[in-house]
Length: 376
Length: 219
Image (tube, each protein chain N blue to C red):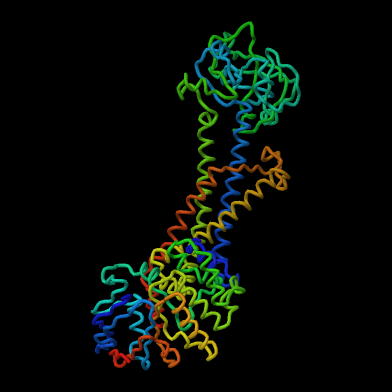
């Protein structure tokens, strides 16, 4: 039997559970709450990041391939779907209200097969039909069936000094508030008899590993890279949250140091006995190191498990409800990241190691043998 | 000889004065014998036992255990673990460990596999078979002292050092312990060094010495 682990365990869980004192309880609670808070906060941020990703992919796909040959993409026996598109900025005018929009022209069969626009109806879209976002329709008082004019941003004026325009019929309204896309992104379909000479790109959904070998990163761009600023902001938010909440663990680790000082002072007689029977100084220090790790890792693991239980319960039963008009979703999203849990555990192990070792360095200056000598 | 002590000297600084506790102590001890030491309080008995048990270091002189001079060692923990067993006046059991764990502490420290047959024999020998899982707080004084004796011999050490082993026991338990020491010496050939005020304990010694004013006198 490992005497170090045995003694550390018995010091921690003695017959009188309260013997360890309030400092142990405070340390335990601090580490427990710290770990649980980090896992829960990151789970929520991951959940929202996931929503952001899913909603973004609904209108932009997983990847965009720039300057590619549609026939080549179509010829690959692949695991992905693709949608060639042409995108250009226009002014949209209705009832004397004007707005700058991006008109994204796609093939009609891709509207429902590739994109997930959460349309209000399933009417087929034809040439000169347009689908606009809900926010844009509300802001400009546009309804399904209205006729709207679209002007080129490179204003070209005819001989009668009237701007050239093109009329579209609003066939449908879609819902997707991610990146405020339903305020500026409108969809139309190609006139298949009169296709443009050049595409803006091809959007892709699914596993594109086969294309990664052929195209460089500036040609094959992921949805994260395409929305780099937003994605980076969410990542920074996660990091700041992690480090801010990790302060709870650091503060609790100060208490842990106090626990170690307290227990090492209280157990000098026991250490002297162990030393008399041949335990060396290093092993005696190890007892308190193991004691510290047992206390802290139990608290952290319990905190993590409790948080995981809450995440699972929330995903299963959705007991924390959100307003879908504001948050896009009706229940608080939570997603577990085992990578982040591993990072939390690793950081905790390092911090705890530091805070447990500091009092041990001081403790080594007292020789328990001197104390037992007085008793012999 | 299992133990040879040559010209052992030890002094402590008491403020500006130097207090000589042991003055040129020399003796030899045969394997399997019992050495009893008596002397008035402050005569240096505990200091001598501390030096022999490697709990303290001498100013000068040599202590040779099993033909090895202790001067050759930097760390005495291995010697204490394998060659010396301690029996303290106040038992000094670890209250968080049960009886079996307390007994096995020296074996656990040395990472030796526990000889369960030997352990069972000891529990029967010491009449503690029903106390294996008890904790020190649940034991009587006599039982605690028997557990501390078991702990002292579990690693089969060369020498067992006992300081006032009956000092904290009533007469009945003290007599039982004295019998136990004699029996252990006879049955297992264990070597004892016992410091005591108790004449009954002193009388069991094959070698009897008196420490007076830092000097050892053979009786």
